[in-house]
Each structure stands twice: as structure tokens, then as C-alpha cells.
Length: 175
Image (cartoon, rainbow, N blue to C red; front, side, top):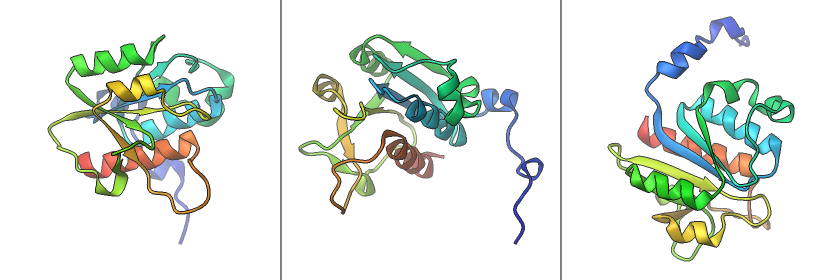
């Protein structure tokens, strides 16, 4: 085996990325405080052609040097929009016909491995603050909650890890 060179990977140019058909998914960050988490979500969103990222509340916006350390330029390829209120972001998504899910541990949540998606629909997922998760007021506005099954002692995963798992699952089911 030989590692591929960057020039052998046939990745899209920034222009081709902007024109490419996107995954019908918006990732919403609800008061995510870590610039590294935000940057990692941008990078994962670039990898899987996520349509847009909504940055809400205290979530920082590009450009930012600490965010760039993990985004590695994806903050310039993936479209993003800022909202002071996550509730306003969810309301806008509903008005545009999106089905919105909180990624949270809730009564009646759907386990990720049981999630069924319809290819003709547009989706959004809300990921919450590193300590408090998705605000209950935001959960109340969502169409449902998705939970990642966990089998160890910890109660949650890091935001960027959660984003990677969720985005991959949506890409597998919708691309």
C-alpha cells in the first residue's frame, strides 16, 4: 500500500464545491463555545457537501484563527449564516420546509441506527452547547430528537464527534 498524494485525490476545487449538488442538510450549532469544535464541524461539513451551517448565539463566526486550525479553509467553502437566537434559526428552517431534529437525549428520541430519512425531504440537525446540550426551548420547536446509542459510562460525546457521526449517517442515507 502507498499513501495517496493530495494531487491524486481528485478533490473538488472551491468553485466546483460551490456549484456541486449539496447534501440536503443544514447543521445548526446552538451556543457551541469551542472554536475547535466549530472548525471541526466546518471541515466535516465540507467533506460531505453539507448545504449550510447556522451559527447561533455565542457560537463564533469566521474568520477566526483558532477556528481555522481545525477547519483548514472549510470555513470559506461551506456556506454559513449567523442567528442571535437558535429559535429564530429553527423557525426559518421550518418556514423553508425543513424537518428539524435536535441531536439530544430525550424522551421518545429516535436512536440513530433506527432513523429513516426520505430522500425528497430537506433536513436540519441542531447540536448543542458542550455542557448544556440543546436548549429545551429549541428541542420544543423541533420535529423530533435523534440520539446516538452509547454503551459506556459517559453521558455524551464531543460536539465535533457527534457532528461527524450524524453528518456521515445523513450522507449515507441521502447522497
